[in-house]
Image (cartoon, rainbow, N blue to C red; front, side, top):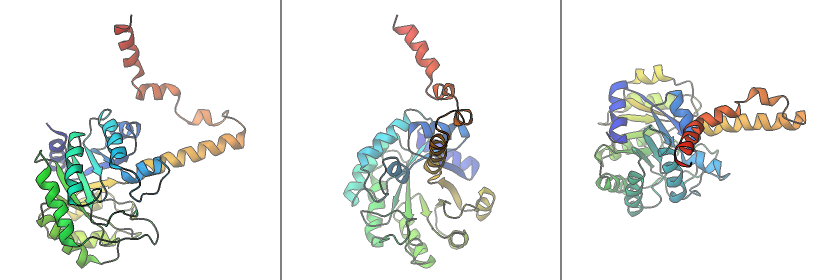
Length: 290
């Protein structure tokens, strides 16, 4: 069973899948062990890992390298964040071929102009493509995929760009008509009212995807109650968690003048060995390198 079919099957069985953002194979391993249904190969998280702004500065090659490394260490389906598709419809065709070959189960393409600015940036430039041009990107993606189960998820930033629900619905319907398998609706409001309103108004033929970063109180129970949201992506929690832990630990080491206090509050090196499958590597060494 392909990873794409595995993801579709999980959605059909559960009704709602939970996808955790990752920026490295290690974070993907931890997400799988925690019980998530899939991995979000996050452009935001990878940009942050490089210390760069999420403004199309990370290349497709860099993103694919990370994604392939994750696919080599995790059995979960990967949903790839490919931003605007790296250019026009021709770039999207190339991207779909490469991401499918890399083992991706789904891609999310957003309707912003290239280069993009992170959706949650205060006063960031949020310019959207013409509907017809983005429909061309979706059609290009759908016609290029070799696996019919491979999910093409169209993300509209109409609410982010303050264009209102009516425009968001219009765009979502147009993208579904172009062949998108799901519509990702995004908001940076601090409460979920905007997303809940959109969900209740959505009469399109495909289900919705949300990324509840700004409105965390929209939990699984409330999401299921809306009925048409089938995927929740936890878009930046991996990198934020890692940053929180490192900031705290590094500051404590400086304040304490050493590691005598923090060492007991972090995982032992043996846990890292376990995640690295050190015992298996040692067994292989003993077996083959005598």
